[in-house]
Length: 144
Image (cartoon, rainbow, N blue to C red):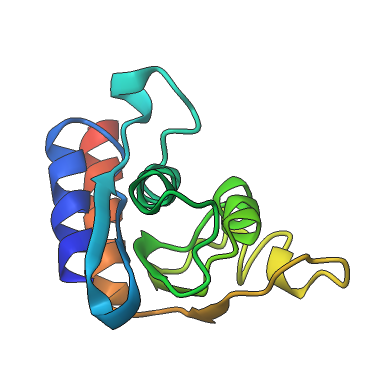
C-alpha cells in the first residue's frame, strides 16, 4: 500500500484525482504501479487500477491475474471492479471506501452479484484515513 499511496500523491501533484495503485505478483513481487492519468491521457478509463492491470498482463504475457494482489487507495469504481472480474484478479486491498462511486462495498457491489464470473478476495479500509484525507484535501483545494 506504500507504493499505491506514493502514486496517489504523485497523481495529486499532476492535478489528477489522487488515486494510486500497485499490483503485486506471487511472493509480493511488484509488477506494476500507477496513479490516475485521466486528465493527462484525455481518457476516462485511465484509472490507476486499469493501468496496473493492463501493464501486469502485458508483462506476464497472459490475461489472468489470479495469483496477484491489487493495492489501490480508493474502493474501485464499477468500471474497475468489472475489469478486475475479467482480469480474474486474485485479491484487492483498498484504502478509502467510496460511498458515492464505489463498485465493491457500495453501489452495484459487483462481486456479490449472483452472475459474477469471478469473485476476488477483498480487504477494505487499509490506511483508510490517510487515503481519505488525501482525497478530501485535493477536492477542498480544487473548490477553493
